[in-house]
View 1 (cartoon, helix red, strand yellow):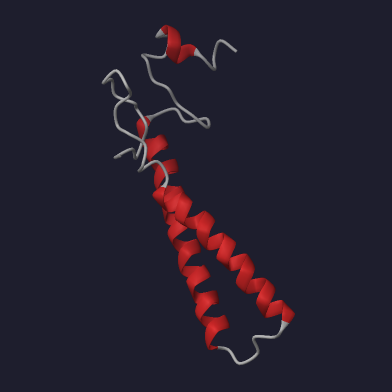
View 2 (cartoon, rainbow, N blue to C red):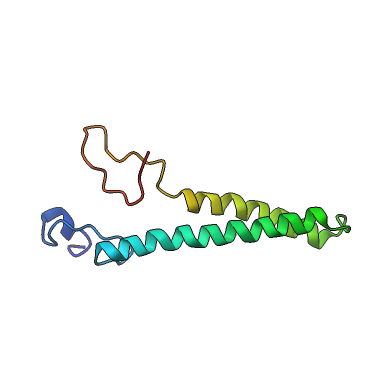
Length: 104
C-alpha cells in the first residue's frame, strides 16, 4: 500500500504513475496507444458501415448484428480517441490537474 501512494509523501519525487508506469514517457505511450487504437477502431467501424449500407442483403441477420456491433464500437472508439481532452487543465483552485491530454 505504501508503494502505491509513494507520490503523496514525496518518496517518488512527486511522480504519480498509473497502470504500472514509471516515467512520463510511459504515460505518454499509454495515452497515445489508446488514441491510435481508437482511430483504427473508428476506421474499421466505418468500413463495416459502408459495407452494410452498400450491400444488397440488408435482411441478413448476421449482417444486421455486425452493423449494430460496429455502431456501438464506433461510439466507444470515439470516446477513446477523445480521451481526456474535455478535462480542464486546471482544477477549481487554479492548480495544474496533471491529466495527460487534458485541454478543455
